[in-house]
Image (cartoon, rainbow over all chains, first blue to last red; front, side, top):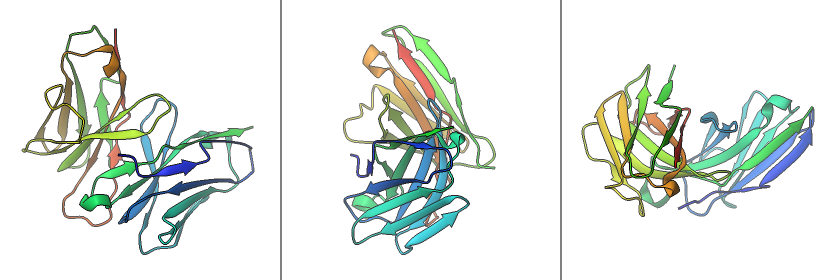
Length: 113
Length: 118
C-alpha cells in the first residue's frame, strides 16, 4: 500500500526559480529517500535522509525531515530545464519491513526554459 | 558503480503468451532484488521481493502463479508474466540491493521494461 503522498501533484516553474515538493507519510520510518524519474525511464536516487536527521544537502538539493509531522520536503534551487521529471519520495521501515520501499504518488515538475 | 540493467526495454506480446524480463546487477552482487509495477502517471507498486536462492515474497494481491520470479544467481533475477492479458500492460522496474546486513541503504533501479499486451 502506498504510504507517501506528495504535493503538489504537478508543479510548473521557470528556469532559475526554486522548486519545493512535499511528502507526507503515515507510519514510522527508518529512512526517507527521494528519487527522480524521467518520462518512461528508471529511477535515479537523489538523496537519503535518516529518521534521526533533520536536514541534508546535496548540490542544489535540500531535503528536510520532520518526523513529528511525518513529512519531508525536497527543495531544488536554481532549477534547470533538465530538472524536468517526476519526483518521488520513498520510505522504508513501515510495518516492520525494514527494507521494503513504499513510494508516494510523485510530483511532476516542469521547468520551462 | 551500482548499475542495474533490464532486458528487454520494450516488449509487445499477444494475449495468452508469456514474457520474461531479466534484471541484472552489472558490477555488484545483489542479494536482494525487488520488482515493481508502474501504471502511467502513477507511482511504483512493489510486487515482490526476491532473494538469491530462495522463493520470492509476493505482496498482497499479486498473483504468484501469474508473475513468476526466479533469482538464480547474485546478479540475475527474472520476472515471467505468464498468460499475459492486456491489463498486464505496464512498466515493470526492478531494483537491486546488497541487503541484508546494511542499515541505511539504497536500491539501485533498472531502466524499466515497457510491456504491451495486445
